[in-house]
Image: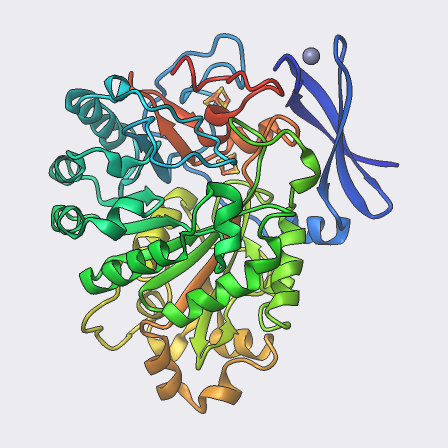
Length: 485
Ligand code: SF4
Ligand code: SF4
Ligand SMILES: [Zn+2]
């Protein structure tokens, strides 16, 4: 056993802050921690220390703090959210939950939803939440409307419109798609209100998967949502929860499905299961980031490799990984590779992440202008504005000649496209972002990650709580924050 570093973590039994050690054994990375009252806990973090270190080496960003702390430092992290003055990172995505209610009863559900309509926040409360985002988040402002299932609210179009009037730059809708698929009039109102993207729960391409989690067939529902969004010009991000014994065997097919629906589908965002809220307590279903990436490599027959995934432009090397790929005749031309090193040029990671969300996940451009720069071509509105003659891509920024990128990804790029003109033509709307975020539960918890978190849930009294803290429960299902909030 080789210790790597000390970590601040939580006891899974009592949520007390306890110290742990990150260590390597047989090439794998673990966290071991001890509560004086409840004993020892060991959690696997990664199957391969070399890959783990590579992700660290690939991650190098400057940070920007939130505009205003909203809470005082009293008991110390993680009990003072927030954001408290110690928090190191501005919000890149503010999650606004407009209901606890849901029309499904999934076996996995971190939100622990109920069906009591009287508990929904009223319009004044939602206005306060939106205004707090506008006041405290640096521009541009990005909100995800979430729940529960937000489409249970008939006033969702008014809520979206209110957000736009307040000046929120980007509003995406997190949904299971049931109502959108069967209520065209309602969907038309949401679209007219100005929703920017749909974040669609999408766990697989076979109904067996949906039957297992929800007890009903859902593939037609999901397909219909994509069809409707495509017609309305609204970008869709597919969001699979991933677990062993559930759908890990379908990740390649999900990416294939997404590739066939590009440009209506803009991204696939995998979320490995974490044990908070209403999730089965059996831990054998957990999937690490590396395990997921290895499955993607295997199931795409090597077209997308583990090495094509770089740390996401999130605030910590081990919170997520992203691959940006072009789609060419159903095949993949990945543009990102860890061999290119760290994304260094970002002066403000939260701002870059927000622009990236806005650019990549917005709907299809009906009449795209010719790309004139790397920013136009790949990450609209983000990073550099260099002329195409200097076109460069690095991670999701721009420091190395694109030709380097393509040559470092054998089988991609210039061989297939036959030249710049073809390449540029193909890439205007033909890209897919494949990403993952490994949300933390009480077993895998590292304070360093939440202190740097940029995904924040907005509470009804106008505080920001890092998503992992907000949904954190002890092993008996008692929330650290959600119930009180
Ligand atoms: S997670 Fe951030 S806001 Fe919450 S207590 Fe820690 S430093 Fe403060
Ligand atoms: S929500 Fe959790 S996994 Fe995502 S950035 Fe924040 S701390 Fe990391
Ligand atoms: Zn304890």
